[in-house]
Length: 463
Ligand code: PMP
Image (tube, rainbow, N blue to C red; front, side, top):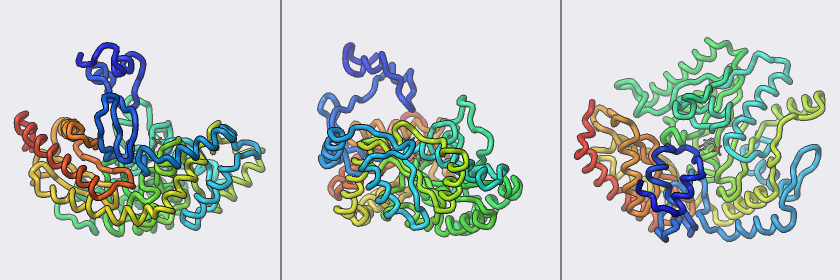
């Protein structure tokens, strides 16, 4: 056991069951204990600084020491630390936040419901879709389609939507009425010689076939991230969303855009919907909505959905859904201030200005023998490491090389996250070009060390 007795890490091991962690490995090695933030950096309990090239979990858009958000929280804490929004009550900052969020999202979205996490937002979206179709007298129209490698959270409905084995295995999900279609990742899923356009046409055809097989009268909605994040930062081919949306329209299937990662400037537009041309009926958001300083998420709905929900709530006496912390006033105040800062500092323009430094910088590693693909847009990217460049063969077991890379990069002072063997990079949106150069420098060092280690271990060329 390499953990110092009586250290914070050893106490953490004694009491803390971590999310998304190998508990036995944590018992052996302990966790990195972070103590404070400074711009795009976090500092551990021993004073070591790390550039947080994942903005935590794709979320701390304004970095880790924005005093205005601290002040907004403090002010609201002193004034009204808690109130709810049930039964015709709400708190003042919530009124302002609701107005602001509806104003800045696509015009067809007219009402917003608040929750606390991306998972809750997506669970809420599914429940709204079901409630809506029951209200319209079509109780059979209930199935929700999500995509392979889509990530939508871990609560029961959200974990069912998240089409990844690590979220579903041994958790008794998916629940009924959730079905999956293909992932728009050309590098991994295109057939030999298939162009991006042909690949898109095939995915579109497969979606239509799935809807017809299930029966359009049973298919209610399609949920998708404009760009798939946790699945590996998968940028869809040009024209993908236009074709998918035409099929959804044809069969009266609602589109839910999951903007939990892509929202608020990340892809170089305020929303991924703008970058990739989605016109959703519903939108979910979280993370950068409050720069992650307080938990808050939201579900936006079109007027048609709102009207059906409103009528049904009148018929039943209430819309029987909501969380104690829905529209928490402190979270709302922090989110409102976050949106103000994004606007004042024109965060979208900043992302566009510095993104080429990151995207071009990472693409300089594309010729490296370990690198299969470099992909991304705006300030989100991934570099996929492969065992054999020519055949695209992945390493066996998946994730070992990626984890080694992440460890080496961390030793060089930069935190990335390995999604299997894809190295994700999604820094705070306030990052400067000089800080991006630090990210790239650590990336290069970690890549060389990983290549040497993989060769030593006899990994690679497994195809
Ligand atoms: N949707 C997307 C696109 C996400 O990336 C995530 C989290 N990474 C979620 C939903 C779930 O959010 P949460 O972890 O806040 O429940």
